[in-house]
Length: 289
Ligand code: GLU
Image (cartoon, rainbow, N blue to C red; front, top):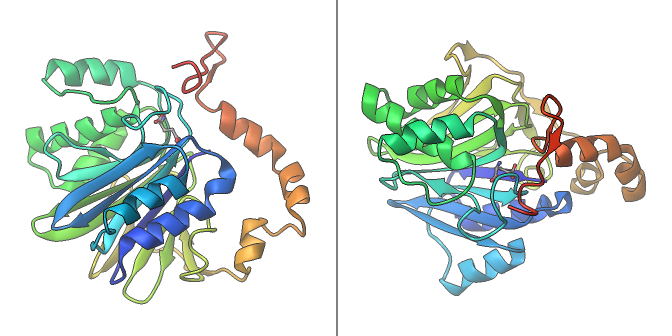
């Protein structure tokens, strides 16, 4: 299943993102990618294992940026290939986004955005969200956070999403959740974002679990949590007491026990977005396109 990692702080983001993605590998995925902001937005994404992505990143000498997002994809819309892998970037290349979940009304949104001249590079539902945010920002002149909030009111479906950008010269990492888990790791002048505690525990034990309809805006000066309707929230910071190994085993004593206990959730996760109960159809997106 899909995974998200995000980082803003003083350390190089590439190694934090790649090791975080490796900690999410047990969930299964078909492709992986990272986006780093270091003055400019740079994206590296490809089909296959995180280790292959790590080799590509290493081969180009790594990235110097200290802000970035990473993703492991479990395709629902479009084949598992390099182009469909996340992150996806805006047409002007000023922000990149990763997404777990399904945008159910992506066809209608895609038609509208195509009509306005947006060119889709991938077959994913996710790219709709990218161009929608871009379009709202251009049409309304709203800032990036408000544009994300407005875009989220227009999408039906589920998302855990993370977006990186440089706005007005300021680095920003935005995360939002509806139906797909997302949590914040609070460090010393550095903040993390992940879809699971496993990538966080080696960096910090202080976490905030976002609930559905909530989002976080992280800047170098700090982070703010709010609803996606922009109501500020004071969320409790929880201290994770589990070791890295225990987090990986979700608190169970043995991996086998974890696998058994998580079967219902695993089945639900792998079927999400593929079964249309109303229409009585099953779409095996990612397997047969
Ligand atoms: N629906 C998105 C896609 O097909 C995200 C899949 C995922 O959750 O990894 O690219």
